[in-house]
Amino acid sequence: MALPFALLLLALAWGLGALQLWPRMRRAAGVLPWLAGALGLAFATCLVVGIAGLARHGDWGSPAIGQVVHGLLGEGNVVMRRTGWAWLDRASNTYLQLDLAFTLLLLCLACLHGFGFWAGVAEQRRRARARRAAPSP
Image (cartoon, rainbow, N blue to C red):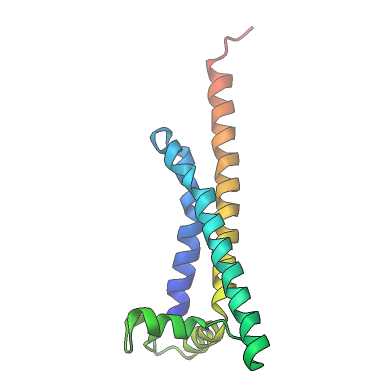
């Protein structure tokens, strides 16, 4: 079950850039680069923790996704349950074994890409409105 939640979170991070399309939400869209920066800073922190673990104990010190989920949501939560589909359970187990830094990096990149993509769409809409409003020669 962890993989569908992760994909939903990834889609949400990418889709937040669509806030730029609504005229009243343009100020809120300025928060998105800061969110991506915070995710990037969290990624860098996870890397530093991982490298510090290598230096101190000879083992990667950054936590896995499964450890974080257990720590935040506790044992027996919905994210850790089996779906009954073998392929999805295997994919979820693989995802849970990944380093937290990988997920933070993907969320950071998705947030930045979504911001850039939706900014391009907003600019195209603005140009189309300007062409329609301009007087025809």
